[in-house]
Image 1 (tube, rainbow, N blue to C red):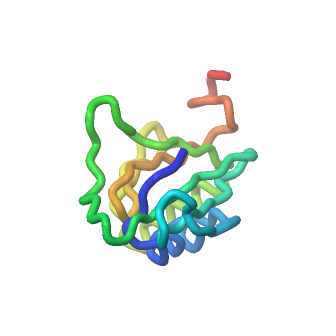
Image 2 (cartoon, rainbow, N blue to C red):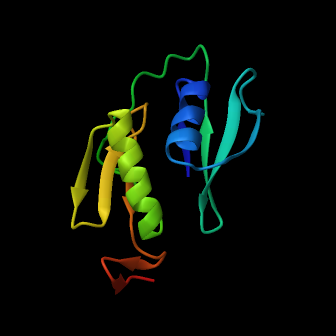
Length: 128
């Protein structure tokens, strides 16, 4: 999955420092000079990619029919608790559902979910 970042430094601070997803690489986007393409390790062998497009004024993120609703990321329960506390300390608005899902938005408005279940499970039921 690749998302758009309006501010590379802010995105790195949010995903790497707050959510503890290590930045694995940052390179120049081959398709748009001056643009960055960068990646975070979100666990389970998965990366979340970002592009920035300076000077294009793409406007704010919008949730639309047929578009991205949210990104669900599985983390272990101890990590979930720690990250919930960090989100609260940072003043990031969030919503907890079913005691195992926490929903919030990144700095550009993309909706994220941290799920305190093993990859392939949802609320204790196998989905994979």
